Length: 485
Image 1 (spheres, rainbow, N blue to C red):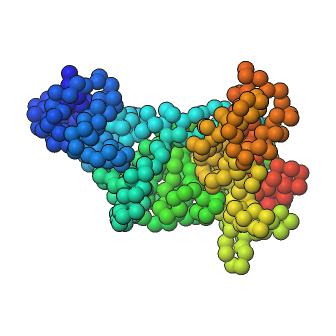
Image 2: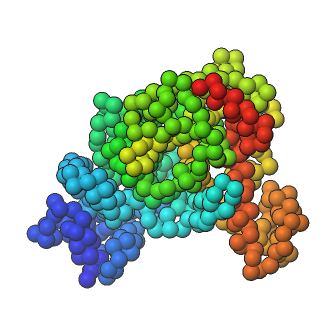
């Protein structure tokens, strides 16, 4: 079968708005995009390999220029035919929801993978391994899925003047063709739902960091904020989608995520290491005797609240947030305000456990100092060779998202540890020398030992981000704070 014929079969399989009666119409639509010379182009039974053949044919036929963004824009356009319209996707989703939330999310997730919106092939390039620590098995990911910038696209982006869509999380990205400095989204679909009396959207992340990595986004482009409505929203979402957790990045720079300009949450069907961590000290929350609360055994400073009563859980969480918002402990460089500027917030995470709701509140402080210009409660300089970026929601829960550079850099570190010729970066030398002195290194154990060492560094990264440290002084201070609750 030809590439065109194969793609039409994919379209009909995924999009109920088309049948075989539409084959001629679809053939002409596809030829318009990739060139008439592609009519007899040999195809591949794998839909994504078939997609590659058509994109290459379009480039060979002069229909698109030789650039990464042009290829991605065409890929998205070709898969848009296989994707029902937004109104149809929403109708199908909510129809399936009547049979159960999991039925609806399974269908939407499968569609988002099959139509290549979720970049499954790119995600498969990521390196993922567990790391045993005193806090349980942390999850280490070296993120190779997002493609490097194409120099041609970088040059073109310098001249691309557009404020539409306002950001990558806006509803206006649905169906957007893309440009040199903005990802192609023609095949993108967003489920609409009401949250707190406002319209919100639900979609999947194209470069998922974990299973069914979902994004819940405000229909209005407005800055992130953590307040009582945040807790109400998170619990409402896990009530709506009980197999998903959902959490929010903090709303301040340094301790927040990379997209503070647009209110959104992240969730999915994955159990993170922090969710498995036990309560080590029970805590009483004043005015909320029916809430079970406690300090979680975790490198960061986490208070877990548990109740079957959503309203009381929200009120208890808001009480904790308000107390932390004003709390200062000069002995630990913990300050709620400096020169009138607020520095305290929380990273909240909600999940269902049977008939009960759990709400984890991670205490955050975004101060900087002369000693720690990147953040007092941020990865310190001696671990930034592994992780320098913000510690956002996903890392907080125990899954490291490490930069792609580490794939090649760690390979050179391993050679150094084995006394082989290497091109190790100087930033890793102090760490590598410590490892060389402490452990025996052989070709058989080097990779596993180095991965364990990376895991220990990530645990230290999280400890750096923790407000109340895991030593005796820090834990006594944490208890002092909890007594104010």
